[in-house]
Amino acid sequence: MRLSRRGKILLRAAVALALAFIYIPLLVIVVEAFNSSRILKWPPPGFTFSWFGKAFESDSAREALVTSIEAGVVAMLIAITLGTLIALAVGRRRFFGRDTISFLVVLPIALPGIVTGVALSNTFTQVLGISLSLMTVIVGHATFCIVVVYNNVVARLRRTSGSFEEASADLGADPWQTFRWVTFPSLRSALGAGALLAFALSFDEIIVTNFTIGAGEETLPIWIYHNLFRPKELPVVPAVAVILIILSIIPVYLAHRLSSDDAGLTPGRGGGAAPTAAPAAIAEAEATAAH
Amino acid sequence: MATDAVIVKRSAGRRLAGFFNGRPRLQIGSLLAAPMAWLVILYLGSLVVLLITAFWTVDPLSGSVIKELSWQNFEELVNVPVYREIVWRTVRTAALVTITDALIAFPIAFYMAKVAGRKTKAALVVAVLMPLWASYLVKIIAWRAILAEHGVLNWALEPIGLHGPGTGVASVWLVMSYLWLPYMILPIFAGLERIPDSLIAASEDLGAHPFTTFRKVILPLSFPAVVAGSIFTFSLTLGDYLAPKLVSNEQFIGTSIFDSITNNQPFAAAFALVPIVVVIAYLGVARKLGAFEHV
Image (cartoon, rainbow over all chains, first blue to last red; front, side, top):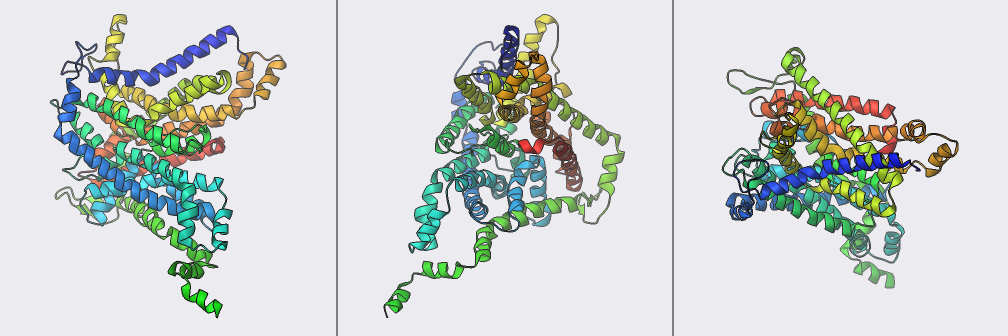
């Protein structure tokens, strides 16, 4: 669009302001991580690396990290299995109720996280009589991770033709052979991207986790949350936060490389997402967002 | 006889294939059995249980749950002024966050979609998407550092004699606007991308002032995308409890649910239905405004 000089300057200023709004808080937390003072005071009186050392030395932080990885891996495996099964049914076949199923898959991430959290915790404790533990956390995470695997796999299935599978069957392969040698190789990178996103979503999740976790257990986000209220540990929190920001770049970068030809890169609630094809991204952005 | 030999050699897998062949319902059924058991029984089941639990009550003396249906929780929600005020405060904040995000998001989305060159556009898309990946909790903690009494905001405002919002509602408004901004930028960007440049050029060629082009061409065509973005900003604000808990002393729907879950689960369940109802109502309005062609 043709804009006057003044219009262009005004527009650029608005863009710069928006970017400043987006990035200043992230900069603040980075500076805070090096703050030499125990208390929060701006500008920091001096700088130190010691909080990072303390973060690495903290046993509770390390335990929480292990717990988070455990929860993320198991939730991811469940989500891969269930999400792929649904994608194979929805992406390759026509049947009554197909739209309902795609709606059902999105629902756990579309509803506010607090609703999912209250509903699951309520069912576990009031109806099933299960006490909350890491297992209940995993069940919750797997439920809303299904959608990211499903989205990635179904997008890939839409772009590949079912005729390869028919050819394989015509040539005498049994269903397992067809899946192993034809379907799976074409899905591999989509599955990889979906798995990474599911892990990242689970790793960052706190809203549902807070409602479904057992009393003595902590995932890393829960550890951060608890330490906000422990003055002794508080100064370590920004350092852990910065480590988390750096760590979060890895799965995103990998997922982006795996699915750079797909529109399927999206975040979940609170979590991220990121496609080059914005419209598809947005639909999936919902996923991240809802929590 | 040759045929016989072949039949003998048929693997278990192929016999299975023969069994499934021509039985499409069985195929679909076996693909969907496990995932549907999970999503329908566990998840939808939980939502149904939530609905039922909302009608239970808690014995005030023993603290145990009385599993008999009653309207008590809902009567309390409607009749107790504190709860009405909490719902109203949350809805008001969600609306304010939505308007704020739309105002911040539109210029940058417009610049990305219609003004920037190819490279700048790609860089801006990444710049907007990156923060989505940073931990949600980390972002709230950053805002705690900004909003604290001796934090960045008060330090910046002091020379001009102003003071930040402290732990008031305005802090929640700021943090929520921050958290959900990318969810507003992306749909608007996508919506603006879909407007053909030729329409804008036609308006310009016919002599319209850029402002007129904006008001009469761009805004009407991109409005459904703004509404689509508002679904995210509105419903995410409505259901959040950590941001209000960590930067404010005010009660919101989410914090009230969170606080009542330990000693009054039925009341928490009833309160959790409030955001669902409001979101559904909002989705109805959004559909009328054409938002769903954009999601």
